[in-house]
Each structure stands twice: as C-alpha cells, then as structure tokens.
Amino acid sequence: MRKQESLVAYFDWPLFIVYMLLLLMGIATVYSTAYNADYPNLFDFSQKYGKQIMWLGISLFLGLIVFLIDSDIYRKFCVPIYLFTLVLLVIVLFMPAVNGARAWLGIGSMGIQPAEFAKIGTALLLARFISSINVKQQTIQTVLYANAIILIPMVLILLQPDAGTFVVFTSFLFVMYREGITYDPLILKIVNAFPGVLFKKTWVGSHFIPILFVVVFLSIITLFMSNETITFESFPGIEIPGFWGVVFTLGFFGILGMIFLRFVSTKRERNNASLVIVIGFVLSTILASIVNFGFQGLASHQKVRIELFLGLKEDPNGEDYNRNRAMAAVGSGGFLGKGYNNASVSSVESNHVPESETDFIFCPFAEEWGFLGTILLIGMYLFLLLRIVFIAERQRSTFNRVYAYAVAMILFYHFAINLGMNIGFAPVIGIPLPFFSYGGSSMMSFSVMMFVLLKLDSQRRDVLQ
Image (cartoon, rainbow, N blue to C red; front, side, top):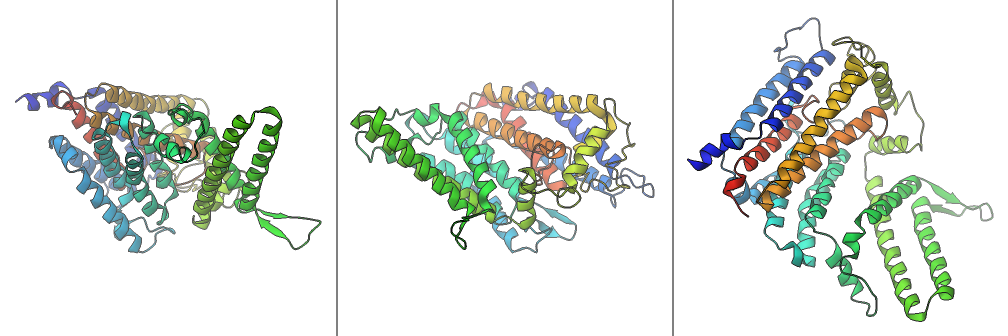
C-alpha cells in the first residue's frame, strides 16, 4: 500500500500542469497555423491538427502506462530498452530516404523517428551506469564506457544523417560532468607516460569551462575553413585545403610558444610546458579533424544551413529563406501580437514560412501573441526546466537524479536551439519545440520521457541507490 499511496502523495503536480498547458497551447497553435476553412473540425484526422490531437491522446495513454509501471522496471530493463532503440536506429538506415535522410520507420504518412526514443534509452542506461560506479574512483574504463553509451547512438544518427538529433545527444556530456565524470583519467594516462610533467589530478575538471570555450572556438574556426582553399600568389598552382591551414596555424603558434619559452623559463619548466604544447596540438588536431570530417559528412542542405548561419554564404531568397522569413514573422507580431488565427507572414495561406507548424512553430505563436505572449511562453519553459532541476536535486537515488538531469538537458537543448533557429541565433538543423511542434514522434517521446521522470520522482522515497 505504501507505494500505491506514494503515487498520489508525491506526484509533482506543478510539473504536470505546465506540461499539460504546453501541450494544449501547442495544439491551439497547430490548429491556428494549419487551419483549413474547408475542414474546420479540430478532430478531423485528415488535417494536421486532427492528427496532432490523435498523437496527444496516444501520448497521454502511453504516459499513463509508463506511470503505472513500477519504477524498478526502468532500472532493471534499461539495457534491453537501450539495445532495442539501437536496433531501430540500425533498421531505419535501410529504409527509403525522406527529405534526404533515412530517419523514419513506418508506412506512408504514418511513422516514427527512432532517434527520438533513443534519447530515452540512452538517458536510462547512462543513469544506470553512473549509479553503479564510484565516481570518486573513476578509471579510464568507466570514462570510456560512459562515452560509448552516448557515442554509439550518435554515430548511427549521424549516418541517417540527422544533424539536429546528433547535436542534442551532446547534452549528455553535461550530465556526465554534473555527476563528476570527467576525462581526467584519460588525460592522466597520457600525461603519466611522460615522467616529470606536473599535472594536478583535477586539472581537466576544474578547467572544464575554459576548455569548452576553446573547443567551441576551434570548432567554429574549423567550420569556417572547411570549404576554403588556401592559395599562394608566389607559387601559382599550389593549393592547400582550409582544414590543413587550421592544423598548420596551430603548429605555427605551438612552435612560437616553444621558442618564447626558451627565453623566459628554466629547462625543467620549458620541458614541461613544451610537452603540454605538444599534447595540446595533438588534441586540437584530433578535434579539428573530427569537426571537419563530421561537417563534410553532412548532407549538402545541412552544410549550407551551417554556412548561412556562420555568414559564409548569403542567400536570403534561397537556402536562407526559412530563417529570414521566420525572423520577419516573429518581428511582425509587435508588442501585443495580431491575435489568435490572425497570423499573416507565417500562415499556411501565405506560405512565407515553410514548416511553420513543426520546426518554426514559434513564429506563428510570436506573430499572434507578440512580445508579451512569447515572454509568457519562454517563462513557462524556464519554469519547466527549473522544476526538473529542483526535482533532480531532491532525489535520494543517483539513478533518479542522473535521469532527471538528462531530461532537463535534452529539453533545454531543444528549447534553446529551436528558439535560436526562429530568431536567427542558431542554424536551421531541424529541432522541434518540445510539446509544441507538430509531430507524433517528438510528442510521444517527450511525453514518455516526462512520465518516466514523474514516476521515478513519485517513488523517490522507496529507493536509495
């Protein structure tokens, strides 16, 4: 009886209420955006808003089933769940391509995206793995295992290719960092191969943020140079791919640093610092190679979107049309908006903003409700994220806490990137707005993810691990 009573006694109603409000607001926005005067019935399943109602019903039904299952099941069966999602990711690679990607599993217009559900399987297995180890005594094996859990589905998703979901999976790295899993053991193994080098054990972990900025900066520079070719006026006919220009530049500054050290340091300090420079050069070259390889492996339209975002290309009426029209729609809403079902720039009739009911659903909402409405919507998402973090911190179980933080980071990535796409702050990489955008796979996966969290939290007093 104690566990049954806890379902009601410890159910997080604030989180559930905000979740339901976002779902209903999303339904209303899809109805307004995709409205067809010939089929005005909200429950007309031949229209997108009717299908969205159907997906809503299925999502709530799945959520109820998920909530009625004992939380121990998710701990015990996280490996089969994870492997099942990997099998789906492999199967989908042999399906016919849709819009240039093999990401859909189904028949006709009815289908699901396995990548959406792979997020749940990865979150559960990562939570189980971290809860089973002593983070304070982590080894190279534990670091590699944790990363493998994330990287395997990422590679399969990149093969589709689905750049948006691939980026979302990097959110798990922040979850690992929150739990204290860093790359220190791996770095120390490399460093310990060179006696005399002074490295504190926690150097990588304590410098995570600066390292992250260096990684982002180097990645952006590599993207800038990936499609460039370096030529020399004095040596016509000699051309070097831009990527190698990045590598040569890193090596050049590394050599300058070593020369400078000869005049300002002792021999022991110089040897230590020189080794650090060499290791830094090698790691930076590896990172640049991965970024360059990943960028070149993207579909042509995905590469163009990134180039447009970085300002390497200008095509306002071509490839960059969606982003420009999206920003125009958001701006046209003004302070108070044009009113419900009165959007003009982002309406279906005008067709100025393609995919306005999916990736760009924030546009019609902003156009209809203006600045005040968007502030309310953003506030609701921020409340949702902060509430999940609050739930994570009150867990007695490491498994529950890690899973909650994984949900928070996944939702944050989707929210931040989708918002950035709509206002020109992020490249268009096909990220839906959680609980809002049209689509069955995203609504079902986010709902299942949310109900698993609600279930784990409702039984938080029954588990200790």
